[in-house]
Length: 173
Image (cartoon, rainbow, N blue to C red; front, side):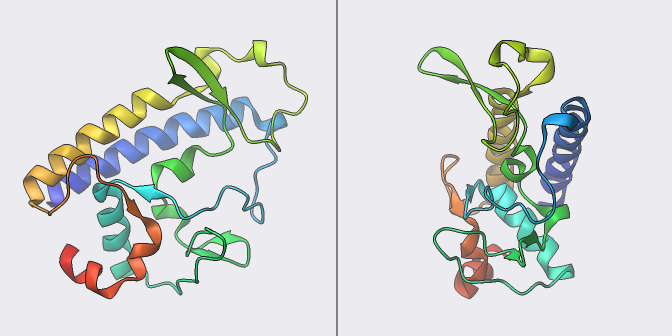
């Protein structure tokens, strides 16, 4: 199981490299900073990400909050308590995301960012290719499940707030 998590950590570094590059490229348009938590929600993640967060929490215990109106349990005083270990979806928020929807390319970006930016200025070179990375994550998760023999299908997603559930924690150890 450690091997698969290592692959996930390497993948996460690739995501971070691209998001750092895009953050630098779009710096003047990004309003994202500590205290902005509009995108901090109780997302559902693949078991590989859930397990990686769970493993990280063994070494870094945090006070998990109650999920209020779908907010993230790791949000405390408008800041992420597990920022270093946050899932991929959280690492890409705020950036312009390019993805396929109903056979056409669509662009998504935070409503607080890119307010004076023309959509025509977005290109594959200055956007995050969400589908490409989601596909890689899906395949890593599939490998992880096969090796770990956890009782999840490759299509299962687990809400982050389930990390508070002791019974589920025990099943994943």
